[in-house]
Structures are given as C-alpha cells and as structure tokens.
Length: 400
Image 1 (tube, rainbow, N blue to C red):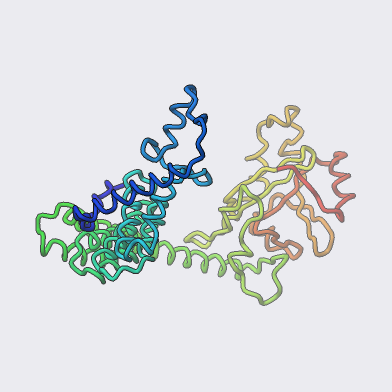
Image 2 (cartoon, helix red, strand yellow):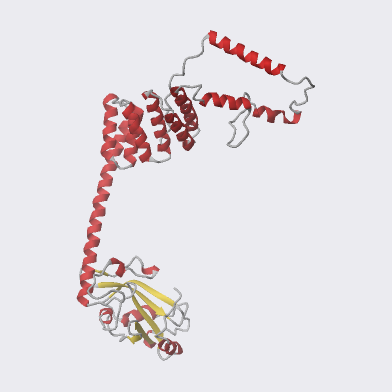
C-alpha cells in the first residue's frame, strides 16, 4: 500500500485583533465574577478526592489525553468548545468546512479511514463557495477511499476535485492510481502523461506509467489466452456431442430430440465433478465412471475411462490384488458379475464382460444418469448378488 500522502492544508482564518481579544477577556472575566457571586455561601466540600485526582484531571478538557468516547458524558467546557467549533451561527460555511477537514486529517494520520471519510463528507456538506477548499476535501476523501481499496468511489472523488481544480496534481495522480487498479490503463496513462508534462522528474508518475504499460500487456496476453482456451473448450464440447449423437447414447433425463448441454454431461458424483465425458482428437470417448460395490457399500471412481477397454480389463485392473477392505479377496476378477440398471424399465442387466465400454453404452437398455457411467459389481452366486437382484426396484444407496 502506498504511503499516506501529506494532507494539504489551508491557511487558518485571520487571528483576533488586540482590541477584540481584550474585549473578549473582559467579558469572560465578568461572566466568571457573576457566576461566583451567585453561588450559595457555604463551605466548599466538593473537591477532588486524593485517590481520584488523576481520574478527574483526565476528564477536564484542558488536561484530557484522549477525546471522549461515543455515549460518554461531556464536560460542559468541552461541550461548549465543540459547539463553538461546529455551530453554523458561529462559523461561516468555509470555516465549518475547514474545521471538518481538520478532523478528517487527524483521522487520516491515525489510519482511521472510515472516520476520515465522515469528516471530509461533513466538510462538503457545509457548502463552502471556496473551490480550493472543496477540491481538497474531495481529494482527501478520495485518499481515504483509496486506502480502503474502494477504487471506483475514490476515482469519482478525485475527478470531482479535478473539476474544481484542473491543475491539482495530487488529485490527478490519485485518479491515475484508481484507473490502474480498475484496469483502465489508457486513462491511467493519460493522467500520468499530464503530470509528467508539467513535472518530468515526478518519480511516482514515471513509475506508475511504466507499471501501467507492463500490466496492460500482461492483461491483454491473459485475455487472448483465455479466449483461446474458451474456443478450444467449445471445439472439444462440440466434438464430444457429435460423437455421443453418432453412437446414439441415451440420457435418462433428456427428452427426445433435445440438445445435449454441458449441464446434462456434468457428473453428479463429487470425485467426478470436474471430469465430464470428453472425446479426444481421434473421436474416442473417455467416461467418468462409478463402480459400485454393494457388499462393502463403497465405490471406486475412474475419472476418464476409455470406451475402448473391455469390462474384463476394468475388473482385472481393479481386483487383481486384494484391497484393504477385502482381505479375503472375495472380489476376484474371475468370480464377479457386473450389472447396470435401467431405471425406466425397473430392471438390471448383467453385462457381458468381454464387451467394450462403447458396446455397453450403446445397448438399448443403457441410459446415462447424472453424467457418468454407473456399474454394480458383485461376487457370482453370492448372498449379496441375490439380495441385489431381489431389490432392483428399490433405489440403491451407497456410502462414498
């Protein structure tokens, strides 16, 4: 984050004349005398206890070390001083604007940027007719917004400051910075060039101009890359849809003669979600596949299963060695049956494991559901196979 720039100050209003100061002093003395004379004549018992001396001192406006918090009772003198500072009957519009500007500057120096914004905003509400004062208020509020990374709002205030004071270098540089972070590189460069035209040795403007040129080239390069990747994905998707249509692949929830969309092809299983079916350059489909093992209530996922392999190839790949969940090697590739479910007919079909995935997906009773291939694998002639076949009309649930 850039360093906070030095807040520009406006010359304070004219000091009181000696005659005015003497007149005011005499009036204060008389008011104090009248107040004391009106007090009841009695022994004074309301002094500060010794154990609370420092506490009472800290509350007095002349000695307090920090401003009162919101909701705290104000000392009458502090409240009176505050009213004098912000009273529109005691201050001109310009004086009010300057008072609020001072508040905003104080918050800026303490990095309380949201409070600074409130101060500068109140200064603008005073509606001073002094364009220079208002330009500084807009520029300082722009700075506060900038450090909060509200670049669009900061830019609006910087531009308002420039409308009031076109040669305002600080506002111009702030506008350049905001345009840079908003990727408005042409506007950023224009502001930097304007600054450098009058001040060629302005280091921040020179640095920002060079950074803007480099970043602009990088952004343009990334945009071209993104567009190329988008076109590549569109081409891949079209090739995939063409191959699906050529094979006559059926989708459970797709009405006849309706186009295949990316939503239709999106896998429903979380491990497969980023791997929809895809046709390679040779037109071979690669499928996201779930192999369900009802006996153990688990699934084995393959993200890109080539349609050219046979189901037998899949079984040997998965079950040649006993898995941790199957130490007895019940799932032996030579002793397994594989099924898919036709939910439209409420039936299951036993697969000829010598067939390729392509042959299986083109069978009349095979439907794609949730974008992936689903197969259930069970040991031959086992109790689990019998139960599975007996419950084919009931929805199957597995733990993934």
